[in-house]
Each structure stands twice: as structure tokens, then as C-alpha cells.
Length: 530
Image (cartoon, rainbow, N blue to C red):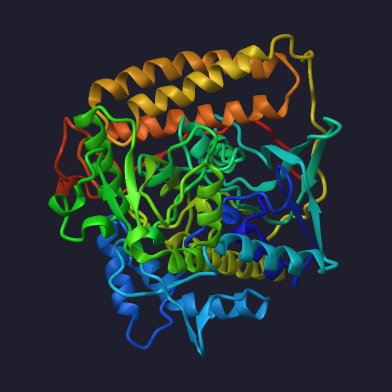
């Protein structure tokens, strides 16, 4: 489920062992991957080393990375890069050498990129490979509703269960299908649309995270939400992210008076880790009352800017900003969830038959803060590992038959009468999270958010049970679920660490240097035993 880099790599690898169906909400190319501008981090230069990349990742993760996971991701990165190149991805180079970029938190240049549209190039190459594969079939404009489980009565939660597939809504004819599968991979991406301002596309509503949670899978470290420091501040520029590579190539952050403020905040100034930069901008906006700060790279010259950032340059120009001549306005926006469905080193969740990869998963690579461009690396490495693990389970025969699942029952549900209920709750939840569970938090704000979410959940649950499902209702249900989990996780962490900053607990506590885990026992959607 999902057609970003994680889902496509999993499908491509797993197709060697069976038929793969890719269920995706819109067109296959519509994913967070497609919008990734910066690149993918990997040790590809002789002047760099695995140890350097490992230490940079651990440092950014603020004590919550799993060292063995970091080591695996970093050391397997070059092999995954070579596989991408074999599939047709063309990273930029200077002569015979790769043109490696530098981003915040990295000690060396190790960011492989294809100009400023790396994600789009990755997506195009992977989709082409999958489309040409007769064992892979795409189901575009299909939205997953819930996972189908073998058996999980609430009174026997300790018994082992199994994922048998998923119920899926066809957006075009509103038919609900049951997909049976020997293995299910959640590659549904993040949940940026939980927030009022986000760099994510509209599809990022936390669907996989919410489905995993409802199936009893624990979600870990959901309080750690990365806010990208620089999205273009312009009403017409919806979700338009300004890549961190702009700062990596010398871009400077200025306040309304034209003064730099990052040098007094951190020794690395504009190249400090994203959480520090985002909080610094937030503090500068609150101090001055301004609506934005400014990013200036004009000193690098027009020729360099047009060559290095052709898409960014063209898009900014379209919105009235010539980044080769003047500073342009930017604000932070919700960008990446470091938490997700808890997995092992092969992408397995606690629920047999269910894998989670990419941003929907929590592998332990990112800890309390993701190092820039490690997300695409994680997707490549663990999608590859998950496909290998699923194939081994298939060979060993421990997968289910993947055949008998119950038909979807509508019960007494009727056609929705007032869609305004959905849109109203959607808007209120996103604004609630932005104001109360944003870059800077307090105990009081979190308490207020929890109380409001309880009311939202009751109303949404009642609406879901009484009316036919629609795409908007399903996405609302999922962002509400993720929002509730995020708030609960943030309330549990009585410290400030990485991306979670609470004014009432401003320092990290060694006794709290552990990952959070939020779980619930699943509601019953069962299939009789064979």
C-alpha cells in the first residue's frame, strides 16, 4: 500500500517471488518521494566514511537512534544506490565523479541528487521498472480502509494474530474490495496533513499508521515531528518546500531587518540540524511579530543558481520571487514524522504478515530527529530488507493462504447527509495541532489538545459508523487517529529532546532516554480459522 520509493522498491524486489498488487490513493507518481528535492544520503566519496555518517546520524537523533539500525542503513546504502542507478536513476555528476551535496547536520558531502528534483527522478525510474513487470499490477485511485485480521477477540489480546489483507475503496465507483495477501507492506508515507501548514502533498494523512494502530500494532516516537524550516511563504505556493540544499550551498537566513540570526543560535549557523533551525525561526517570528523570515542565496550568482536549482528558481519566479536577485520569504512547516509503526530490522511489525516501510514505519534510524536526506536512504534499505523477509516467509510456508476473507458489510449505513461535518472537523484538527502541538509545546497546550481531540473522535466515530465511507471521511478518520496518538505521546515525554520541545520541561532527562510506545487492542474484524 503506497507508491513512493519504499512501496515501489518492495514491489520490485518481492515480484521475484510472487504477484504484487500496488494499492495507491491517487496516481502512482503522487507520493512524498515525488516531492523530495534534496536527495539521498550515502557514503560514496573516498573522503567520507561509514563511521562519519553513523556519527552524524546518531548526533542528530539525540540519543534515541538504534545503533545497529543506523549501522545497517549506512553500510547498505551504497549497494542500494547502485541498484537505483542500474534501474535508470541518473544522479548528477562532475565528470566521472558524483556531484555530492552538503546538508544540515552532515559533516561531509554525501547527498546524491538529480538537480533539485531528485524524488521525481527516483519515482519515474521505479514506476517504469514496475509498470514493465508482468507480476506487478497497479490499483490507482484506491484508498485502503482497514487491515483484515485473522482473529483478535478483545478478551484474548495475547494470542498471535495474522494480517490477511486489506479492505480498499475504489475512489471512482465507490466499490469496496477485499484484497487477500500473503504479505502486506504499509508504505503509505507520513501524516503532514494533520497540520495546518505542511510541505507534504494532500495524500499524506497517516493512513498506514492509523490502520496499523487499529490492528493493535504499537506506534513509536510519534511525538517527534520534523518541521522543515523553509517553505515558501506565499498563499499561491501551496506546500512548496525550499530544499535544505539551498542553505547547504550558502543560503543565509535573514530577519525582517535583513540581519542574520542563526550564528548566535548554533555554531553551524544555517547548517544546524533542522529542529534547531525551525525553532530559531519560530522564536524570531514570535519575537518580532513578523509573518516570515527570508532566505538569501543571491550572492552565489545567477548562473550557479539557475544550474543548481532549476526547478526552485523557475517556481519561485512563477510566484514573483527572483532568488538570484533578492531574498525570498520562508516559514517552517510540518515535514516528516520520525515515528511510525514499530518494526524490527527487516520491516516486520508485531502483527505477522504485516510490514511497514518508509515514513509509515519506525525502524529506529532517525531517533528523536531525522538527519537530512536519511529518509530516502531508510526507504531503500528497509524496503529491500522487508521484501527479502517476506520472500523467506513465503518459501518457508509460514504465510497464510491469502485466499478466504469476508466481504465488506455496510450494515445499516446510509449515504452521508452533510459533508460539511467532515470538512469542519478536518480544518479544526489541523489548526488545533498547529497551535497546540507544533514546534514548541507546553503541558497546558497538550492538555487542551487532548480534551478537544476526545470530542472530535466521538463525532468522527459516530459519523463513520452511521454513513457510507467516502475518501474524505476515511482520511479524516486517519488524521484524527494520528493526531490523538501524537498528543498522547507528547504528553508522556516530560522533557525536551530532538524535535519535541516543551517549555515546561526544557532539558533532556537521561532517565527518559527511551522511545515512546502507544498501542491499543484492535477492534474485531475477524476471519474464521481455517
